[in-house]
Length: 418
Image 1 (tube, rainbow, N blue to C red):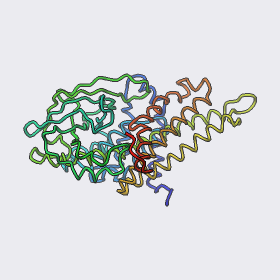
Image 2 (image 1 turned 180 degrees about the vertical axis):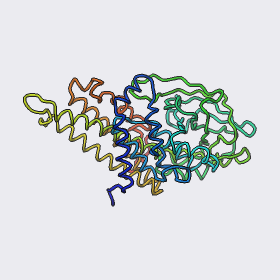
Image 3 (image 1 turned 90 degrees about the horizontal axis):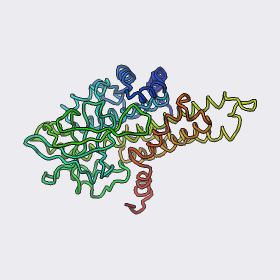
Image 4 (image 1 turned 45 degrees about the vertical axis):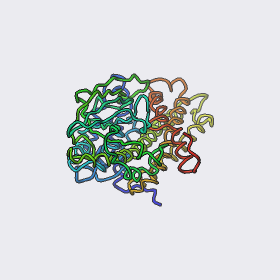
């Protein structure tokens, strides 16, 4: 077992860390509080090739995998600039299109993912169903050679910044069920808390690449108590008409059944990269908080010596640091398994990594605030601004409770709890 990064991976980590430090947490917070976006950082990261490290070289990318993209996510977050769109665009959308899109779709979109000029967000969560895709209310109906989409989505990140959104819909019941056995083989171990025995028979999911300016697609901003430049949105799809090739995996109307067959495997293809990169971003945020706190406690003088000399201050920080390092090991394992094509094992590891990193990040930020005392709640010291995001990380993209359900059922072989 090798715990060392390759020379190329270490160079990537160092270079991304350097880029992140040039912008820093002050830049991130200023953008968030002014209603702006981190466009300058995103564009520079794209020009330098960091946003496309997981895109195949044949499409202009770096030819790496989720391991490399997780490094980018972690190091930007460790510099105080956690970019959520790294998760939804290159991790989810680009992976799904790369693995299950047609050749025409790959040529159309992957080069833009590679240089950062293409942003595509992801829409699965719904007001009534939450993340239970077995009960999706968004429906796709055939319309000649094309499709009509109707439904609602919620908590859709960054849709105001992207020209496309990848929408998960349920194909109307009168369409042939083309997702049967292919769906079962594509999801073993990859989703926290899903029913693996009969999902394919009860559901015909399909993924559609929808322009965000399509007629019938409207949005409403959700006000969030999170300091982030990426906004959250409600989406309304009112008879949104789409051409045949909007269906992922389908070039023409005559071949649309191939797109339906790709639906469930494509959906699950995005879940492991999502969990791994969210975990990496949380670990980076935790590292940033601990570094800020350690610098403060080593220099803040009370009663003639640094407050870090007191074990009541240093031990909680040390405990948080241990939890973060353990989470980072799980992230590395999950990414390695995923890049090796061991999807079932990667699914378990990705869930564990997401759970561990979310808990570690929440602990690290809370501890960092505490050791700063009153200064911890000021914007100037740069730790309280992380509080909302790390708390949300215990909920999204899959809650800690659903991960525990998954581990109990699929790792410990306990009866299903829901």
